[in-house]
Image (cartoon, rainbow, N blue to C red; front, side, top):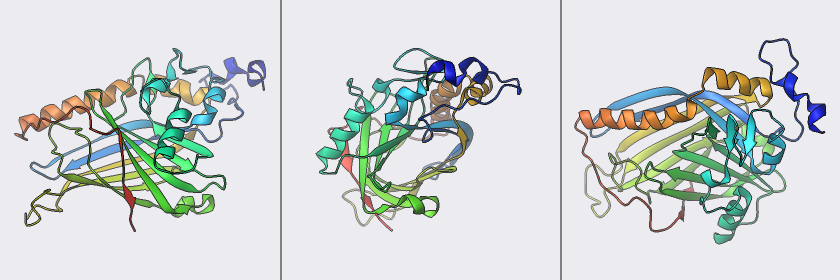
Length: 297
């Protein structure tokens, strides 16, 4: 289908009269409208929630997404996906990055990879967490990669290989339980002696990702604080199809979505400081760019 056939100008209309544009080859990409909640338990109780729009992108469908009027792949557009914003940020494409990461852990090349993330809106983006879902040739989810970033430019990838892959026809009711030891300093108000427990449902009509951060008290097994919850986070959303009308409405309604993420991080940090939560210095970048977690039931 060429660009003339897709009716780009009509698809971009948001007046309710133009037909919704159908773009071929992007059926596995979507927009999720939802919210993000954080609840900190220690050393001070602190809770917030805000609206969040998230993208699910099949990394092999980026060229097809260029058919959307408001989208650009590696070039300026109201909404744009730049390879340097994901993976290692060293110039490799998303496909090159994930193929090489999987190979490092002796895992097969994924037939399909979906990336849950934020993308640039009006040139700005910050991804505290992006999630790579890796599927094999039968559609089974066999590996998940959690890409964590801090506001100082560092990033780390936690890879979890699933010993019992999730088949495509069970995804709608299956949640994955993953455990990773914290390897990367993210927040100056949270120490390194922690474990992450992820509960994730591969996105379909709904997005669901829960993270619990537990204190490990490394080197002190007798500590009464060992295993206590420090933080709970919940990321949820409802699926929307990607088309020109959806993106135009998104641009009008949430033009500062990407800036809001970074602004919210700094605002909440100020609130924690005002509550007297200790400031903890740590290495900006981890010793290793990636580490492996495990699945649990």
